[in-house]
Length: 86
Image 1 (tube, rainbow, N blue to C red):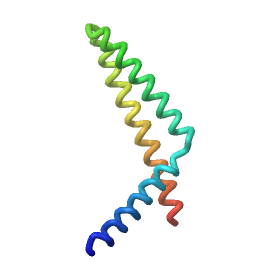
Image 2: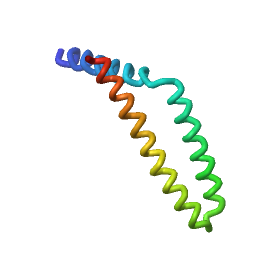
Image 3: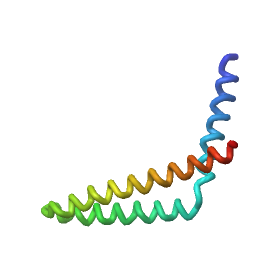
Image 4: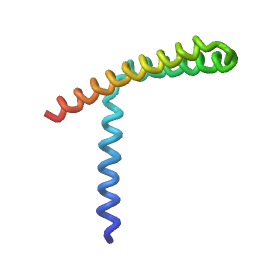
């Protein structure tokens, strides 16, 4: 009978995680989808042209910029959650 409290706790935690994802704006999700698709398209096209070293450097720079932007989005959503809790 120890399993029932554990299952209830897992369900509560699952609900908390899902509610955090529901707080993300649709516009941010759409923007991230577009960024991912463009990144994948560029990556696939660069795979076809493996000889170009400059393009690989551009991909690395693009990755760093996207990580910085994504961190900004995450910190913004964390601020929203903290302000909602208060």
